[in-house]
Image 1: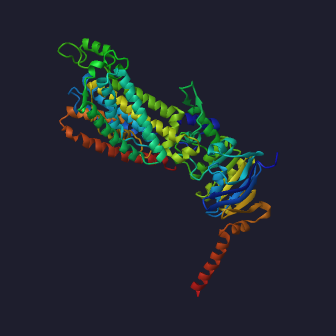
Image 2 (image 1 turned 90 degrees about the horizontal axis):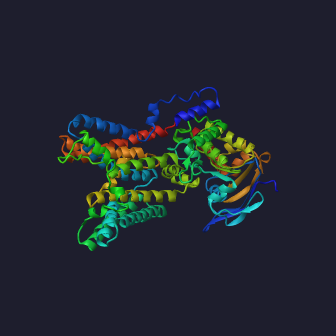
Image 3 (image 1 turned 90 degrees about the vertical axis):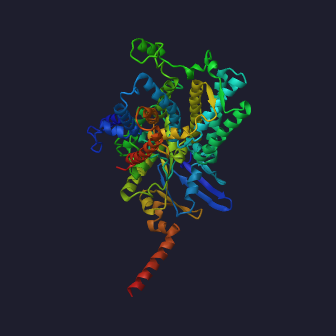
Amino acid sequence: MSVKSESIQSKKDSGQDERLKKISPLRVLLNRPELGALGGSILVFIFFGIVAGDTGMFSAYGTLNFLDVSANLGIIAIAAAMLMIGGEFDLSIGSMIGFAGICIAIPAIYWGWPLWTSIIFAFAMAVLIGYFNGIMVVKTGLPSFIVTLAMLFILRGATLAITRLITGRTQVPGLRVLIEDDPIAWLFATDTFQWLFTWLGSMKLIALRTDGTPLATGIPPSVIWFIALTLFATWILMKTRYGNWIFASGGDKVGATNVGVPVGRVKISLFIGTAVASTIFACIQVLDAGSADTMRGTLKELEAIAAAVVGGCLLTGGYGSAIGAALGAIIFGTVSMGIFYTDVDTDWFKVFLGAMMLIAVVFNNYIRKKVTETK
Amino acid sequence: MSEYLVQFNNISKFFGKVIALKDVTMKLKKGEIMCLLGDNGAGKSTLIKTLAGVHKPDEGEIIFEDKKIVFDSPRDALDIGIGTVYQDLALVSLMSVTRNFFMGREPQKGLPFFKTFDIEKANSIAAERMGQIGIDVRDPSQAVGTMSGGERQCLAISRAIYFGAKVLVLDEPTSALGVHQASMVLKYIVKAASQGLAVILITHNVHHAYPVGNSFTVLNRGKSMGTFQKKDISREKLLSMMAGGEELDKLEVELKEMDRIENN
């Protein structure tokens, strides 16, 4: 963008504006919110490349493994990041994942619904709950922290109570047999590019099982969703009017309202976004495991927020990026899987997660001052 | 067509038992700068919010281009051409100059459902508009937070004009600014008026108001003390008409008294 503006300047007057320093590409990068996350992910890959380079972490199977974990987190982190840019939090993401899981499983197993209707049912519930969260925050003016904290308990409690009431248990297994021939379920349950992996296997380029089929069978659905959502969210934020409204709503609610931005509608739609992303997460996990669990998704809301923060989102709203959140998710996913390949006790993962977040917040704070300081 | 672009006739506004405004009348011609003066609590804010469509007047009428107007929302006021620049300026400091300039009214291009924010066009318009008022936006993608207070004020005014303001209502545009910055903003206000806009300048600083104003309306405790043409009133008279005047005289006497006692 900065390069373009230079051409405007030089068009206007023949000489270069003496106050406009030549902006180096590094400087442009420094002004981007995802810088910290980019640096962090490069460091993480260098670290594991050195420590675990020869352990199979970066084999096809190992890579897909940590990408799968990153991608799952990324799906909710991107939605959480957009909501944070819009100036709000959603602490009910984890509970929504559990709730969406039983919304799929109970109708399909106990009520005899076709799997695809229960998936649509789960998404409809997500839209409703997201709408409710949004309208509560917008109409009451209460902090979204409180409203969605209440929703965290309500949804988790309802998930447990309803599941026990109907099934007498806390798990609903038996979904795997329903996936085949379902018109929608494949969207969340198919490994893609299987031909590529079969071919790589036949060329003996990737590890094989004893029966000759490749160990890694294809790109998991989570990764495809993750890439698609990252691109979609980035397009919205950078290239559309709605994206500008998201930044404006989070940056200054009153100011945005005064110039005609429909702040309430923007925020409500972002709450629906996090609930829908949670349901995508739930679909992928439930169909992968073949069962729904009432505790699924516990604490995921905090991991999503952490990834968004590491990705450069400000807690006060109005600043951040979807690519940053995606990189934040990749950092967490890579470390959580990579730690198994090192000699480090996996108990230390949470310590790393916390430290990483703390460093990110301090760094972001510094960047924000840099961006807004009067020159 | 009357010679006035906009007229506010006998506007009153009550909040419960409190009389915020009583029978305030103001008339503005095209190209005129009217300064609305008054001390804190005089009703200046209530009056502009009434002009901006935030409050509905309880009594009186607003006549714009010879038609009686009733505003249901701030949007209505904007649509007919009353552009209000509040003290907070409605600028987001973390967002770029361009994104602020077009906030809420972004130009779009492309097919329906795939419309994108036309950022190139927006950048060039923002840079051009800012250039016209003598502010070289070094880079329209720079954050507004990097601009000076005067530049921000000018950006907010320029935005209101670009989006069709015929009457510009400015709430304390110079109150937070230094001398140099304030004069830059005042110069721009004069320029805007010379292009045919009617400007209502709300301030409690007579020294800023007097050089640029054509007429002066003084509010005191919710009532208008009258509207005066510049030739009919001096700066000192204006100052003393605002509630502060008498008190400042008293203060001066008291200070002299204290001085005398100390010196003895």
